Length: 467
Image 1 (spheres, rainbow, N blue to C red):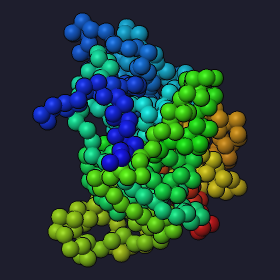
Image 2 (cartoon, helix red, strand yellow; image 1 turned 120 degrees about the horizontal axis):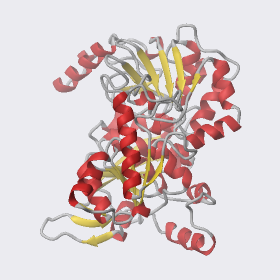
Image 3 (tube, rainbow, N blue to C red; image 1 turned 180 degrees about the vertical axis):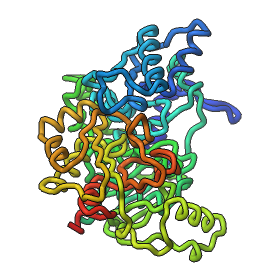
Image 4 (cartoon, rainbow, N blue to C red; image 1 turned 30 degrees about the horizontal axis):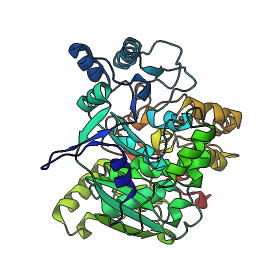
């Protein structure tokens, strides 16, 4: 029997196979770090008198707590300032490379690494952050880990884990015009639920996936965790190689040729069997938007808020009613009738250059609706910000009436001043719409950059077609 992509990468990193139900020990090629989940790990090493096993396989940046305005001034949030300064001290003490606020390579941890060419096919990549699944877009086995595991990787460059189950999500056919990667993943989560991928590595396959850019593939894999999966993967191909070639940490010369030869072997065998398989027809997909308080509570933008009375399962019916009450909506209400106060374009899901280009193309020549309080455009990394400014996208955003910010997680998790007030409603290109995610009492609708931009123009949830 053949093996899947995930199984191939696992096998290539197996240090010791567990016996009698014990977990395997696998080697970790790269660990990404930020200020939120690293302090306890550094302190654990300090107390044990240990040093990192391979400092060259660790790299850190500042993202969650970084302010996106006035970055040259002292951070007014004392907790945020403390977390950032602690990371800087720890990295200096232990010799870990750090890209801090103000550095040209600083950015959200899952955005800066691919740009530098640190993320490569066939690698095992971990970080104390659930959206590490983003890097699976390159054919890497990438997943989030806990703080104690962060310390273990720092000390040993290995992890003790039981093999994950495998799942295939096939998107067959060609996407209709106006349907994006964000719409694909929201549709997948709506179909399989927020627990549909639990314990699995999801491999995204099919014609529609193969035609996506690397930025779009990262959006897909990023939100695998919202389907309950441990990781998401897409087999590397010419699109992957073209993206990586010439980047600072990509192989060069003869090593590049050898790397590509290996990367081309990283694909699921024809006779491999997945533990679970799901298929969607690309032609059936439309722009998607969430109505509730988890990423699985979504519908096509042309649809309506569901009526809990029509949901047979009692638990799901109660959850839907609770979400509708929190979101201040009515059963049967058309999604396009919902007015929005704030628009957020950014995050590790949709803050890359392709995303900003998409939003700018729609916004150009328009101005935000008078009813929209503010539009925040936050690039996922400083390199993305610099590229956007070279292309003049920043001017388009400013002329539109949007706020052009520095790189960081920002309103994705309601950090520093970038948050909503109770009852305020946003349309957001981020990945989570839990109660209070963007600020206490905040109401969040997840959508693509195109839908967010169109909504900013019209004031109610809209798609570019509505323009």
